[in-house]
Image 1: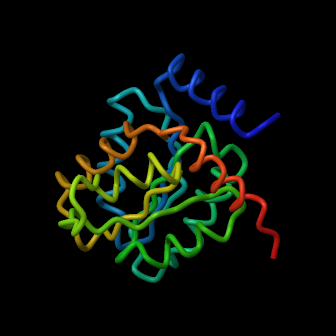
Image 2 (image 1 turned 45 degrees about the vertical axis):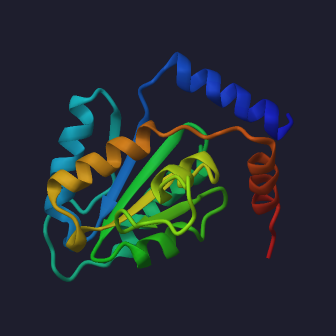
Length: 176
């Protein structure tokens, strides 16, 4: 199946069923925030799969939880999304991006673009890169900020522009 046809099918599926399957994971740094985010997303009707941490443990390691999220996204990158939380979100994105078909981005908040008519980074992560994992630094956002960021990111569509499809195909074909 061509990539364009695949993305058209994905668009139809998302239109037909607006409820998403969301995998979420964090270490101790984002544990409390994750617990609130899981409830927030479930109230919206999303299917949320919590990949841990399941208790606060200051000695846990973020790769253990991020790997569980990224593995699931890698299996079904078109129909699922991942949210990973950590102290900064950086290490979490590095781990997630080790998996095929995972496109994780780190978001630190709004920035002022230097180019006129430039859309925001969060919007572009979806519209241009079809990012399927959002990595957030739990130490840098309020609970309210996170809920707003996640809502925006989950609702932002992929553009389906030919150039973006072509670029994503090139990324998927990388074999190191």
